[in-house]
Amino acid sequence: MKKKFIYFALAAIFTLMLPFAVAGCGKDKKVIKINEVTHSVFYAPLYLADALGYFADEGYTIELENGGGANNTMAAVLSGAADIGFCGPEAAIYTLIGGDEDAPKVFGQLTNRDGSFLVGRTDEPNFDWHSLDGKDVLAGRPGGVPMMTFQYVMKELGVTPNYITNIDFNFMTSSFLGGTADYCTMFEPVASDYEKAGSGYVVGSVGALAGEIPYTCFMAKSSYIEKHGDVIEALLRAVTKGVKYVYENDSQTVAEKIVGYFADTTVDSVKTSLDSYKGIDAWVKNMAMKESGFNRLQDIIESAGELSKRVKFGDLVLTETAQKIYNEVYA
Image (cartoon, rainbow, N blue to C red; front, side, top):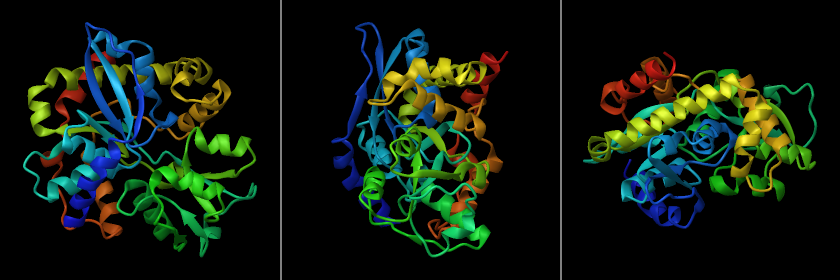
């Protein structure tokens, strides 16, 4: 597991070079620095909470930075470059197993399945996942949840693609556009934008195939959580309200609220992406992670050969505050 921590340390330098966007800071508001694993409509409730002023209501503003992979996000958290990490919980599992004295803990789950869609080079209205046998596929970084989830469901189907793993997460789509691989997994709105541009065709949803899994979560160092319980509660309340708004309003309305978070993307494209994610029930209403989902995640990591030992749910995951906020918002 040492190689993962060397990677985290080196990735910290890379992370600091990837600023994405900064929300406007009022003089009277405190800032929460969030490093997100990637920037996608998959995380619509987070951006919506910012756009609708839910963070401002709590007395905070957020700074978002795109880590371009869970390893980079974890590096930002460990180095102190970010207050909160927003990525797959596997990064926290690896860190806890490694014996870090201030290992981050997961305090809230937002997505409950894989948010990527498989994009091919030709239109395949009758696409069959078994056709991926022997094909070149860009599906993520070894040890990351996107890759491991894809590998897991392919194993269950008895399909053996040829995984291309030497390309950084942030450059997968551009590599695919340049001719690498037969298929590539992409998040929205990138997948739909590729299809509209005639650069590829969405042939299937990985999330619909894989089922429920704690896919993207909020985490912070244990010391930060102990000192900043107000921040944790504010974030969970704001995002839980964002999820509620997404499910209670049509995609057109939500798209108009968050389109500004996606450069060079239209309202129609964001709406299409939201419809896709609503169609697979992408977001949890209660951000308190379930132990059953955590155990399935470890099954997937174990299947990929990336887990040296299993972690106890209570040693890594905090649920009390998320459950409290859910009860409050949905009262």
